[in-house]
Length: 437
Ligand code: UDX
Image 1 (cartoon, rainbow, N blue to C red):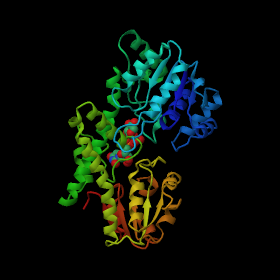
Image 2 (image 1 turned 180 degrees about the vertical axis):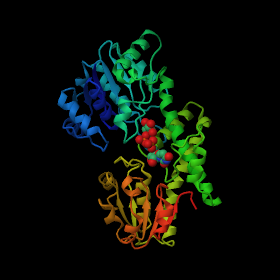
Image 3 (image 1 turned 90 degrees about the horizontal axis):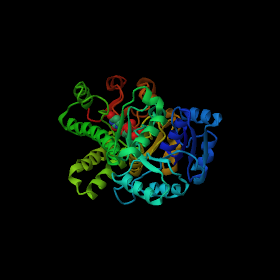
Image 4 (image 1 turned 180 degrees about the horizontal axis):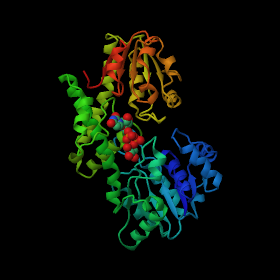
């Protein structure tokens, strides 16, 4: 199938490479000339395991190319729109300017029978509006909405072997044709029994935000329990294990810590709240504001614990911050709790030296005032306190005995509850977790 992918950010670059890997002929289009030049050389503009390999092999096979010219989308049968929907400045709502611009500039290049497929996360109602615009433009192209559920760090796998496919399509023969085209594109996943939910536009849009709202709520639920555990003298990690054995609850996404961040969960729950308010149903998701607040409080809690560990004075103390990315296996620092903790501690006068296996460059661009060390051992040398905020395996595996020799004070704040507290204490450390005694 000939495919165009409009927008080559995280979602689009992975989608374009994965579709070519599946055997389709793909053109990736983006307005950022620098990004396109790098992608054309097989270099993704972000860290994602497995992506450089499939990008290079797809380019070498001739099935994948890149362009900044929207006219190059002409001739493809299916056009995926994968541009970003960031949070609007000064508002909780999603900023749809990139989606609107992509549709407007794609429209003149569409032919009768083409299928435009929205992948961006949009407020419910957007697809219906865009479908009406497409019809009015008169090209004879139709629209489907096919939300993406990929996790950073597992993006290639999640795109090639998704756990479900959701098609939002119009009713009747048009919808059947759209579903058939999508089944053809995802033939390998469909053949292995991946569940396919064929539905209307509104449901498909809501599936995505509902899934992210649920995940965010699950994390904030356990973080709320951590807040209670802190005053009650209980251990939230054991609590999570115990409730997680109930299959109806499940243990995944019950890790209490510094909370969620990234390019999706925070902005998606805010955009969902804003859209629900527009629709006159703000009360239905008012709890998501609480979910957001609980999450943000955990960042402050890590900062407070660190200052407490420094006997109340952060000024001029050396704080080694382990982790900057919003989660391991990513270089993404968008709304990263780890980076925010580092910045706040710096603001309190601490000498913050931060380290991360992948996210230093992105962090430095945003916060040049912080000190960075690529080698974790350099970061923690002579530190007065360690603060672990991204659970990279290299940080989880630090040997408390060995590094006890190179820090100034053996104090660690485990912002991800990912260390063996007993082992650290046995090595003479003062260990502080979140929601743990
Ligand atoms: C998320 C959704 O999982 C994905 O389906 C959607 O398409 C995009 O948003 P992603 O942003 O890559 O994916 O991250 P995810 O793995 O969901 O983690 C989100 C945040 O929650 C991270 O900051 C992570 O550290 C945090 N988290 C996760 C917790 O604090 N505790 C947990 O138990 C799990």
